[in-house]
Amino acid sequence: MTPFAPIELTVYAYDCDAFGHLNQAALLTLLERARWDALARGPGMDLFDRNGVWPAVRKATIEYKAPVYAREVLRVETAVAHRGTTSMTLRHVVRRVSDETQVAEAEMVFVCIDRLGRATPIPDEIARFLGPSPPPRPGGGHPPLRVPAGDVELAVDVRGDGLPVLFVHGFPFDRTVWRHQLAALSRFRRIAPDFRGVGGSGATPAADGYSLARYADDLVAVLDAVGVRDAVVCGLSMGGYVIFELLRRHPERIRALILADTKTEPDSTDAKRDRDELAALVERQGADAAVERLLPRLLAPATQATQPEVTGQVREMARRWSVPAFVGALRTLRDRPDSSDTLRAVRVPALVLVGSEDAIAPPPTALAMAKLLPQAQCHIVPAAGHLAPLEQPLATSRLLADFLGAIP
Ligand code: MLT
Image 1 (tube, rainbow, N blue to C red):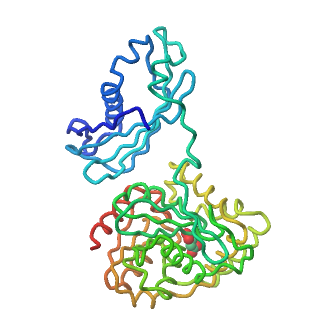
Image 2 (image 1 turned 135 degrees about the vertical axis):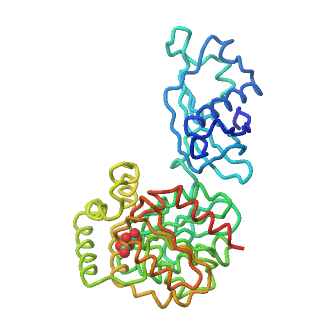
Image 3 (image 1 turned 120 degrees about the horizontal axis):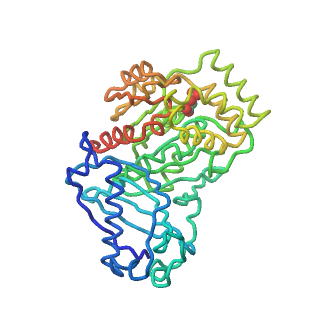
């Protein structure tokens, strides 16, 4: 139970920038107002004054997840994430009231200071109001569902209600590659598994236990486990190749298609040789060595220069692949068939999107792929490489939300 009441605040035109969006600094002001309003509804706005102390902000971390415009009403939910002797951390979740979209998440660290500006223990009355320090959230997020699939258990993020959307990650990533979309697309039921051998999922010990058929059947096991007959399936790169196999094996489970940074054509002879070399490298030196070789082609140059956290996440995701899964996936990629005919037979709506600087499945390939599909829209995401959902999360989530919102 949080001691802070949720507070609703209206965004005014003067909170917005020249583009009409809620300005990032104005959001900080709104968070401050929400904290004071919550105190006013609880122990009183003079809680700190009457105890002779003041809460000074030492650190503010904000993730902006969706744009906000003038006249929209936001709800700020505030919880105590940590309470120490002289400091406290508050976590804010900000949602748009009209559609419950999470638009921002913030963590604020405060130090309790006295009139001379020295850190001082939090007085008893304030400590009682804040309550005991809560235990840290395991893994910092939602615990995944465990889904039995043949000889392994798969880790699956399942969030929300509404139209089911199955997110299928690529190589060598895991379900966290979709973390922005899983947070932002709150009007839909988001289902995101880790492939076998990856992240929180169990590994088949031998590299020959991995194949397109196996990965596609795992997706069916996931849909069965969460009681979904057919879903919108959204695949990134290798996730797209697995969806092509799902189209061949279980087309009745697919209500609509989203294909991000992927392609229908098989590997060339040179590409097959590169896969074998990379597999040998992973067997000798592990995933770290391989990801250093892959990175330059995975992310747009601007992403590599300006978003070090994205590069860091790619390295982390690759480390969560077991060696057999890494090698098994490379052989699966090497041997995959041409899927052009598979797409020609599709009869459901489709969205194709591609980063403007994708070096692996470049825009002309994506446009050609979209032409194979009878009902496809194709969008190029500016300033993104092969990982548009992670490099340009707002633009990607907006395209997905528009497409999903139009599905009956
Ligand atoms: C992926 O992102 O899944 C890979 O780049 C696919 C590939 O290498 O063909």
